[in-house]
Amino acid sequence: MRLNLLKTLNENFGIKVFAIFTLFFFIISSCFTSFFIHHQSKCLKDTLIKNGKLLTRILAHSSKIGVFSENEELLKVPVEGAFQKEGVLEVSVFNLEGGLLAKQERPKIRGPGESVKRDKMSMNRIFDKIKESMSLFYLEGNSKVEFWSPVVSRSGYSMEGSLFFREGSFQRRDRIIGFVGITVDKGMLNKRLNDLLFKSILIGIIFLVIGSGVTYLVVRGITKPLNRLTEGVKTLGMGEVVEKVPIETKDEVGRLARAFNDMSESLNRRERALRESEERYKELADSIADVFFAMDKDLKYTYWNKASEELIGIAAKDAIGKSLYEIFPDIPETRRAGRVYLDVLREKKHQSFTNEYHLGGKDFVFEISAYPSGTGLSVYVKDITKRKQAEEELRRSQERLRNLADHLQSVREEERTNIAREIHDELGQALTGLKMDLSWLTKRIPEDQKPVLEKIREMSNLTGTTLKIVQRISTELRPGLLDDLGLVAAIEWQAEEFQNKTGVKCKLTVNAEDIVVDGKRASALFRIFQETLTNVARHAQATRVTVSLKEKDGNLDLIVRDNGKGITKEQISDPKSFGLIGIRERVHPWEGEVEISGKSSKGTMVRVRIPIRH
Image 1: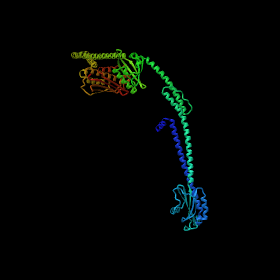
Image 2: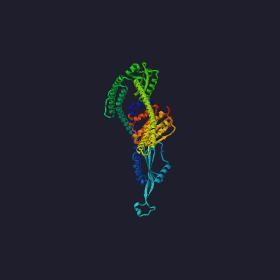
Image 3: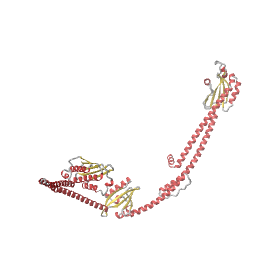
Image 4: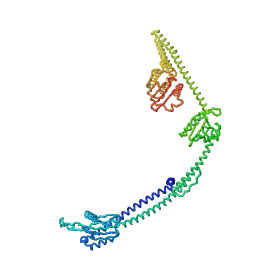
């Protein structure tokens, strides 16, 4: 029963709000009642004490002569006057020695647990306390309050006569001559407090009932439209059409109902738009010539377009509801596709891959793109068999062109070598012989044939100049150092030649002097180095070039840096930069790497890496 009540309270908003506000009103009522009773009780008690003290002081003052003379007749009037006051139970007058001079009391004035009469000792303690304090005090019991006051007589001269008398035994001072006591009944106070308590509780109950009623009405006014909204939301959740909720107020609840109606109408429009979109989606998917299908989280087909029926040969009604592994069983490519599809579902990220299938006696290559879609995925499959064949044909064509270019480069380098050798050997030797003959002829012509001798010397100088030109041309065509002393010597010579011709400082660092590579690799690296220095001279506007040649991890690295204006990305990728294209093509036969980068005003870096053995 208790669990059902707690469950109802937890699940019912109206009951919960009603209980909370009722508890709130109860706490407020209880606190107000307690505070009011406490305050009124304190006020009534203070009034009782104040009146008792005042009455006792009046009695002490009015009974002064009777106490002094110990005349009962003189005490009768003040005692009777005090006794007539409301709530007074007993009035007593004593002399200084504690002897009773006058007394009036009402019957049955003792409360439960209180003694009928005070003994002599307790009375003496009261009298001693009055003598010591010289002031009034009271004793509070369960059903009564006793007020005690000294009866004081003044003697000696007055304060006004103190100017004419010295201080001494005749100076005025207060002297106790007796005692008075008044006992006041607390029953009236208790009765008033009980009446006050009853009225306060009654007011609190009335306040609680009114507050609960108001709370019920407010909660009912809130929960009624909320319940209608809840039913509407449940109906929306089941996909049904919801009628508009009536708007009864203009407050927050009314605005909430209006917002719900707007949301319901918007959802209905979106539902209609979604259905129309799905229809268009299916029409579009059926109209495309490529395979398209959708799958759920278990890799079961939920949609299968017409192209899938035609290419794969399975009708949509036979494919929908079946899994990938049921349509394509025991195929390695199917397992690979399934792993990719699961990755797409898990990571919610598009993935593309290619797969090869044997369908209808033919081999097909498909490009498959999988996209996350809700809780499942959509898959677009494009037949790229012809494109792959064209790409393969293009790759073979490019390979043939590169082989041809490599062959032409080799033939060109071989021809340059042959021409350089022919120029150096044949033309160089002929020019050397001609210069020797001219020198021999000079020695045999008489000194008096000065014009002839001068002409022969000019011919000899021209022959020497021509010989140097022939040597330079031969060296530029194919440096003999490259074949005779190797790559390092040829690069050192080329760096020195570049510095002498351009005035740009060229610093070369080689980590191994005995680098040994075959002739083709040496020629390729040397020509790349030549092309790099040519680009620096033409475009870089540099003042310093650093060259590094080192062997590392079976590769030969050539790094050329300058401090010029820096090459741009557009220049690096420019299809008309034939020098850079040539650098890349020269390393291709050995699967080498070329890295070219530049920063504005900080120079350009060219890095070439070729495997030493391949």
